[in-house]
Length: 146
Length: 344
Image (cartoon, rainbow over all chains, first blue to last red):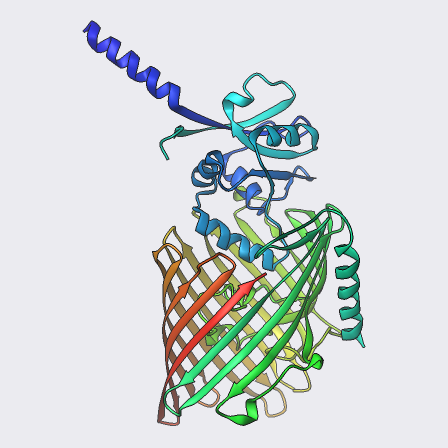
């Protein structure tokens, strides 16, 4: 019984250590304090450009970022191929994809400084910050499991 | 004169902005100079009709796109195109080489975006009805050929006003479009159907992640002809990770007032796309068209392959069986089509 409990605790610890949570973050002046996954998806695909009449500014991570790949998979529900074909159509109609930042730190800095900006980073990078809003936390499984 | 002005405006923007700071080019997404983006697309098409040994190579299009977000609410977009730049055909009357007079303004408009529920577009734009027409260019569509349904029921372009956006309920899953064309048009003779006044609506319901159902209807009067046309249509597009199914239907009724006659047309197609392995797509399509005024009847069967080595590039091969039936005469054509197209 004791052995089983210890085993479960160890497993929980290991899984916990590798579990990855993505925080969808926004500037402090962002017009709402939470968004659902569908709204986030629409914002990052530029199907929705305004929240409460304020133009929102989505910011992406680089394509080779693991966080970006997880965000694409769990929120945008697209792989790279679908994502790029989607933006082909948008480009033909004069709609540009979100701005791309090279690191999570750059995303945080951008979101902090630009009104109505919205981005996403690992939750642990922003957990105790008071200068940005966390709109949504997304559980995306293990960090190195993809 | 207008064409020349547009070209000069384009060149001015291109040259002046090229010397400014903050320049960034990415293949398939254009040259970004500050808020301005300059890009385009091009397509080369090969066609071979085995029935009558007809063969044609065509550098079909070279188009330049320019757009800028002037403010958060105002946007400008333009597209100029050179059509049929170089044509070499077994029918020598079709042969053609480059001529700057062939430069056409495809699109030229301003958008005012009040919010996601109310947007207005003024100018010349692609008629946003149905599934196929808004993405009619070769590089975006799955096959080199267009389904007959997409070319016979309303003009490809309109000059007028479009009011569009989401309807403010059900999680923004409904979209509306109200379109009107009246008065003088930009580049009015460069169109699939030359129409005068035009009025149409569209309602779209988005479901699942990427699927959509739409209904549309409209009315227009042909230019320099007495016919008045009413049309209705619906379309459904179901898109999943590795496959896409599209069905589009249109019906029109044309009234000829002098002899008080009415004619109907009907057309539909069903298309399936399967991602067989990464960057490679298999396409099958069946098309039907019937003109009840003269009994003309067309059925097309298409099988194709689309290879996208890089996302802005598309290489397509297609085999098409075209069956024309007219007054109990049957004609079968076997057509091979290939194309190379690119966004830049």
